Length: 75
Image (cartoon, rainbow, N blue to C red):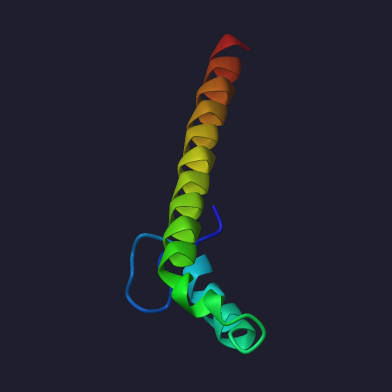
């Protein structure tokens, strides 16, 4: 629905938050040193959350299409 097909680096999974997070981590490493060591965990969690969000959107879109088709066929 948002027409996000990749992260700008050829990753077709549709995730873009980890790319944004890279900059955030870069800007915050001087503030809190352990941010750098937790980066893989942060990126992994962001990817999981974003993929789950996409799944929820797709499921909701399918549900809406079914309801609209039912409503139109009943009219």
